[in-house]
Length: 307
Image 1 (cartoon, one colour):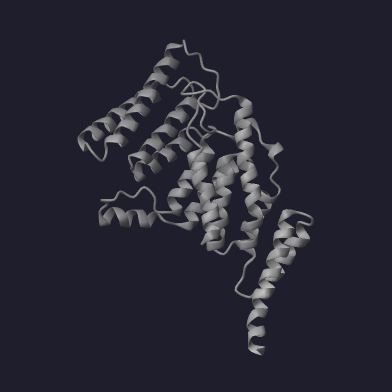
Image 2 (cartoon, rainbow, N blue to C red):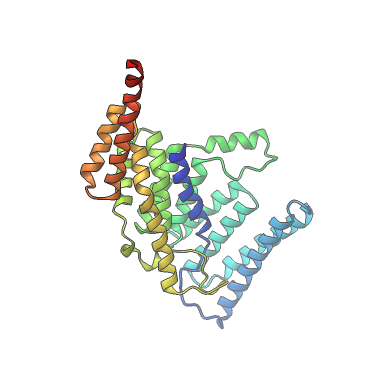
């Protein structure tokens, strides 16, 4: 359980770090089209916040804000100055549906993003979120009907989730947040469907992560080129490097948990392979410590029996 908690922690953190941006394109604020797009999108986001804020206290007001937000999103899409800003708008719309919450519409919008803007830098994240939706029951309204609950449960499929996560990995940079997050999810799903060897390949990718490999586009975090705030290129790259470092630091424990079997002897055999494969590393040291622990536990019943 803790093994999954570690990986799911990666997914949660990445979800918090991945709001939409217009991929750093230099846009002329004085251009009427750019200004119209920006104002419509900003208004839509403000209405989303208002809808969520009043959802529990004033349902009518919340619904009015929701409808206003959707109208503004339509306006923003209609005047988006380029394809990437169109994709950016759809990403915000998908996140709005997640906030409302409306699971079906969120899924529909992420699919619309990857179909309408296949070259967008947001595609890996959209695929990641589609994988998330098919991997777990999320955004289920508290008052959902039995039919709605059954519909969501029918969508649960480790194979569909794997397909989307694999598409995210294929579409993105190896050191980007959506790819690292999707790999964390795949390690869990591969184990569930008997593809443990494929999980090991992804863990090997984690073991070989290098912060110096982070590229400019790998981090799309709390930054807006023309939206809400500053963010220098060095700050964005530093943030991406911190994320890569976290993944790498967690790798030894993830590998230890992947090595465990019901048979202690088989567990030790797997751990010995780690020592051989990653000599003089923190992974090897963690494996040596675990071997000692497993052998100690295995010998405890025998020691007790001789007393």
